[in-house]
Amino acid sequence: MENFTPLSALIGGALIGLSAAILWVSAGRVAGISGIVGGLINPAEGDAGWRIAFLIGLLAAPLVYWAAAGRLPSITIGASLPLLLAGGLLVGFGTRMGGGCTSGHGVCGIARLSPRSLVATVVFMAGGFAATFVVRHLVGG
Amino acid sequence: MKPSLASLVAGLLFGLGLVISHMIDPAKVLGFLDLAGSWDPSLAFVMIGAIPVAAIGYRATRGRHAPMLDTRFYGPTRTEVDRTLVIGSALFGVGWGLVGFCPGPALTSLVLGRWQSWVFVAAMLVGMALYRFLDRAGAPFVRRYSTFISPR
Image (cartoon, rainbow over all chains, first blue to last red; front, side, top):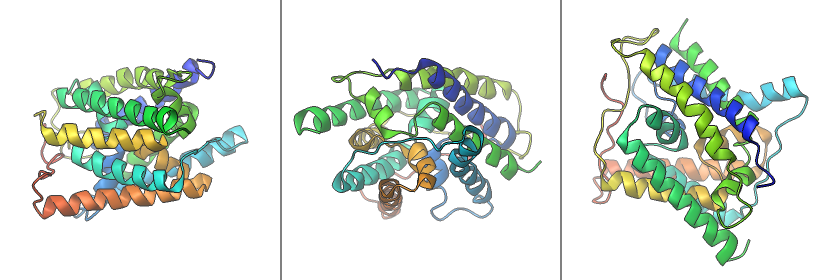
């Protein structure tokens, strides 16, 4: 557990929760990223603006952080090209089929005490644990 | 204030939350998903930080018929726990564990300019479009996706 960062996790989490609360109270929308993006594929009339605005804010965040902190966030993506393609396809297909992702089910749905979201979260966590185990400990990584 | 401005602010806060919590970093997420490795519980603490704050927002609108900037709520209407929900979530979880990206962090990381982020997001959009196509075509293993259709 040498990489455990509970304080930044709680603070960052609270900001994500605040985002969800603002979007709901002001616009009546759920802050589920896969739903926001998926709804842009053939959007209904008048339904695209708020989605695009949200995504602009989302993508601006690392730049705002850069302006404030003086450095860009550092990330490490270890996956190979085949894993990136397979992972992306599964995440896109699965989140639309399951009606949500980590944000829509994992944060917003659980905050609403939705049984669907609770089940979805347990299932995608289990899938994530299993896939990570296979990639890191069975086929080597 | 227009709904799209509130939405812009919400998107920015969401992205800053991902950056500050380090959830934008796939290595950090995989540290949580790798139970057999040197386990990092940080992701659980992100949820512990997020859920109560979001819950306050959802409770605040109880008894109201409309949000501040629109004429109705667009909340989920489906309540059944079915095969579509479970299979879809399982597929998502496996893809998440292969790379360490879920949709929010993958999109937010695009501006960092790594080719891996762009490949992942492109594949993700193809996956979303593929599900929509199969759903529209009435494929037997997918069911019509019909959330966000009416007020609560």
